[in-house]
Every structure is written in C-alpha cells, then in structure tokens.
Length: 352
Image (tube, rainbow, N blue to C red; front, side):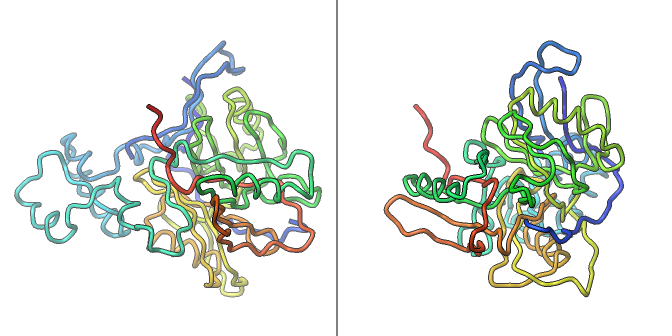
C-alpha cells in the first residue's frame, strides 16, 4: 500500500499569498491503480497520517481504554469549539456534560450543527463531499471556458462553481497541478496547501510540509525533489491535485498576524476532524489572512484550510436548473480562469 498523507510533527511555516502578476475516523481517498513506484499495482491513498487524526474523538479513544489521552482530546475539542462525541457506554459521571452542557453532539454531525443558515458557508460537505466534488480544467486556455461551465451547471439540480487553482501570467495553473491523473504543471511553488480530489469525487485538504509517502515522511518545502514521487503517485491513481496557500494546519493558524496586511474579502476551503469539508466566504467582511484563519478555527473547528482566489480572479456561483444564479463573483473584465471547483449543492440520490 502506498500512502501520501499528512505526517506528524512537521515544522510550521507561515503561508501568506504573495502578489501575483496575473493571477477522525481516518477517512481517505483511495483508488485502485497501477503504480510506477517499484510495484506493479497497488492502492494509492491520500489520507491523514498524523496519529492524532486517526482517533482524536473523546469517545473513540475512551472506548479503547486510553483514559488520559481521551481527556486530552476532550479538552482540545472543547477549547476549539469542536463537537465532542460520547463513548459507546457513557459513564454516569459524564451524563450531565453530554445531556445538558453539550446536548450529546456527535463528532460527525458538524454539518447539522452549522445548518444551512450560515451565509458564510457556501456549501457544507460531510464525508469529504464524496460523490459531489470535481475540478474542471481550461486546457485550451479558452476565454469561453467559464461560460461553458456555467451553461452546464445551469442544467444541473444545483452546482457551485468556485475558483480552484491560482492562475499564472501564462494563463495556466500556478504551482503543481494534476488533472485526473495527468500532470499539467510539475513546477512547485513554496505554498504548503495541497487540495486533492479523488476519482470518487471526494476532496481533501493536505499539508505539503507534513506528508507521508509509503514509509517516508515528507516535508515538500524542505525536500522539493520529493514532489516527483508525489506526482507519480497522483498520476498513477488518476487523482486531481493542486497547490494553494495553507492558512490552517493542525487546528491552528498557519499565517502570521501582520497588521499592515491588506484586508479583503476572503474565501477558503477547509476540513474538520469529523471529515466535513466546507467552502467559506467572508462576504461582505474584509479580513486579513490571519483573521480568516482565526475565524475558521474558532467558529468552525477547521483542522486544515487553504486560501482560495478572490479579487479579480474570484468566481463563486450557484447555478440551478430553472433558477437565476446566486453569485459572489468579482471576476475582472477579460480575466481567463484555468480551473474551477465544481461542487454539487446537494448529495446525489442513491442509485438503487
């Protein structure tokens, strides 16, 4: 089994966008593939490798009999405002806390706790959005790319179009970019955020400074040559992958608080320890990146989060058959995007 995943204990480095000339249940993305990493065939998976993410929930750890560790996890969840899951057999000493203080929330009910009333959350995706997320790529650098994707989305029951990778001055994805197993840009940037969309249409936010590939622990910032092996694995398994600035890592801000930093409307893709992903949009609030990170951690319990493009490269639109689009886009005149996150607004019906 070949794994590309977050690793534990990697150094934290600030990640802040630089000006561009143009522009716990352990859930994982796994697909069967032939792998060119010294084996004929294997499962290639991108999943948390950080031991603290495998069983972080109080109840699950207590069920394993690890009392001290469970209570550390309990305080970590309460302190950050994340939901606390109960053990299978709730001790009488904890009944008041779960029945009265927390009303017995579950670690996998984050989406229900947020609900649909929060206008800052464009879309909430339990189970990493499995079956609901894809990335479209403007391979021919066409000025009509966005209009084509809008027309297609307008025929759907409901689909968000959101700017995915940054766009370079070459009208090409900036940083590493792999689309459905084909490496389209192998030139890494220094950004620590990695967004991965699997063939099962689930999405993960990973930390490039703390990855695991097989038995190797990787810090791609310190050993950028290791990107080659990561790209080979993504290529072999048909994944979509792109770089972004990481703003939250391991439940804490990954950016420094710079008082002179410009404030702007911010957008982010984040995931929680419960396996929920979401797209956050600060409209109409103008925030620094540090303020964005603090809001994601304090209000939503984000575990990892990446910045998404706004300003003149901003697209965030909900299209639905028979309805006018809902838009928070501020796309500049003549700007050509290179890629879009396409997210079904509601889970597709089960196939009988």
